[in-house]
Length: 341
Image (tube, rainbow, N blue to C red; front, side):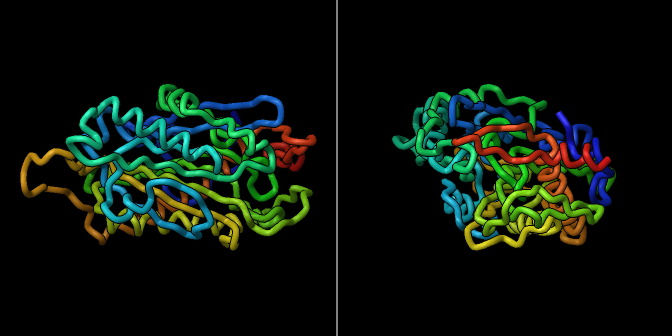
């Protein structure tokens, strides 16, 4: 699997984590289910934020909608309460409902009191439209696929044309799943911020690499009508307000690559911290939480920008060829690098 650093120096100033992946944040795991048959090229990608029962021990979370042309699930309650209580699933636009059902089923199995003796559960699913390289009307994603993606989650995972990224296009090239991370040292403690992207955005010809080169995908320019879902994870203790501000800076990483968040583009950022768990059951009336001093938050802003930018580049470089309906394909950025070496 190729990544951007196989071809060029990595972008930004901050060092990456050991894996240069969202799973550099301890406890985070990622899994895929890829569906490729005939004209169908789609799938599900699962981000498991922490081991254990997320409904019982929720995570502080936030969301930033850069441009809201999207059909995601669970963002309204997440933004209102600042809590994440399920894994995060990514899929195609018409697969959202099946993924919601899978998440609800899994959480009810772990917590039989959901919806009866206690509150319901807020399932979180992000989507992009892979219709240009997959028959989206086939409704191929099933609950079983979503469950399989969750069951496959681990610290090491593939990127590119896999899982939810199987049929995605980015800047006219083959897009997909990509990840990256940055390390920060605060008061002698090493912390991480990791990004995972589902990259399906950008006009052909608009891509700008960190060294200023503008690869030509030799695809016709169309309106920017794709989407990107960015999932940010950190083990830095931050509150919801800080997390939303950090999520907003992922947009800077997207813009560095040449995107301008077009009218038809769904650009959504979801962030969570594995610090500051919030118990579902009332154990005490007042909770104690740690919180990063705002004097250090610029480091997190930079990390979100740099990790998002490199995650998209990794998605582009890791992507492999996919043939969709009527022979539709997209060129590979890795081929462009090899031809221009």
